[in-house]
Image (cartoon, rainbow, N blue to C red; front, side, top):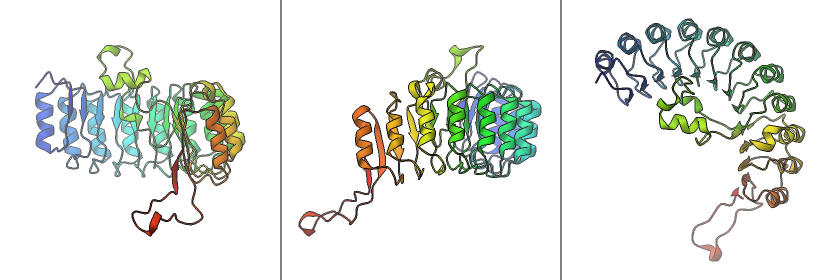
Length: 356
């Protein structure tokens, strides 16, 4: 077992972790997603014997607390990717432990760690300047202080997920855009305070931007190890080479202050012209057919989400698709009255959701 390098476990107890620690000393990749029996003691056992770990997925292991994270990172200081989504007991102290010991960290997922605040994110950024991918979705108390910390300490940032962080504003994203020029993918769903100014700043300062889509989850995958790219698992190489499933999207869903002007700036930018593949504008109530005219310049666009964009019309979508026939448009048009089946019998088919 000593030569084992990668392992996925779907049911784990302390004895399992003890065995890993004792017999898998060379383990580098460990996935313990939804192993709800994992405790702080389990992590202590792993840290004592698996000191070469680079990737660890602890998503939905909801018994873990800051004490378990401290034990883990003291022993596994070479971690490059750590997934903690759904670990709801974690708070700022856990991030301070990560800051102290995980200076090689490039990918961190904190989705739904709702106890995390700006204080924890600030400490994390100061100790982990190599961060390239960070998920903060569902950390609802975060403010622009977290974006400021990222902007000032993590210039290599490529992926940021901040869905449902409703206190973030244009000011924070402006500073982020002006300092993190390598940004490629973002999830800003339900960042309800942002306006066209955020889109304008991203368009100007982030020429590599290609993705705005909900639930990217690309931080499930550790990023490139420049020292030995040939040793990366196949799915990681696909992500980095642009063949992965999450490489070309952007979400502005429920960003209700975004207007046609913001889409104009996006579509006229180098990232819009050359890179944008998927754009989600669900529930952006100020978007009209004029935005679709602007998007005609995005020649690489493959999918556009327009659910509940009430000022967008079928005619506008038809005109855009005449210029971009390969684009899949998902829209919602409620019929005036429910359709009736021929002859009064047989199944009744709803035509509310239209995929054009």
